[in-house]
Every structure is written in C-alpha cells, then in structure tokens.
Image (cartoon, rainbow, N blue to C red; front, side, top):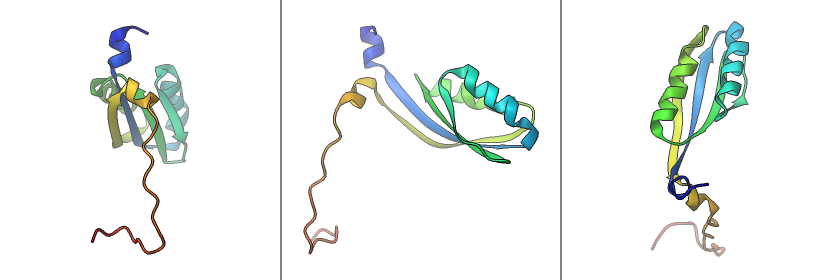
Length: 107
C-alpha cells in the first residue's frame, strides 16, 4: 500500500434498493461485479446493500449503477461515514463504566 493510499479515506455507505422481484438476479450480478459492494439483506421487493469505496463520488457511481439495472425502482442512501483508513486500525475508546446510581444524565 502506498503512502497516499494509507492516508486515504474510506467511505462506508448503505443503500436500500427497491426493486421488482425479477430484478434480483441482475442486481446481484451488478453488486458482485463491483468488488466494493455487498448484498447484506435480500428481499423480494427491497434489499440492503453495503458499500466501501475510496470517495463519495464512487458511492454516487454505485448508486447510479444500481439504478440503471432494469427493474430497480429506487436506490436510497441510508448511511454514509468517512474516515482515514489508518483510523480504522486504532482501537475503539472505552467508555467509562456507569455505577448503579448513574442514569446517564449530567448533574
């Protein structure tokens, strides 16, 4: 991995795809050929797709590609998060433990 790639951002997104039942095979093929999308949940009329891309423009390209599949009615971006790839290697911070009397409300 080059220094530029190591410092690059990773964009994580999820989409809800509304589609006709007969579009499922073509949609699944489009997802597999992309290499950066995954079919997280397949439904008869709605499916959930996860995407990890190098930038927000690639995410928009994936949305457009899915919309172009015959039988796909709509693709809705549900979630989008971006952060440096290196940050993903850092451990998550540990939240302080709550005692029995603490209800998460500041005094």
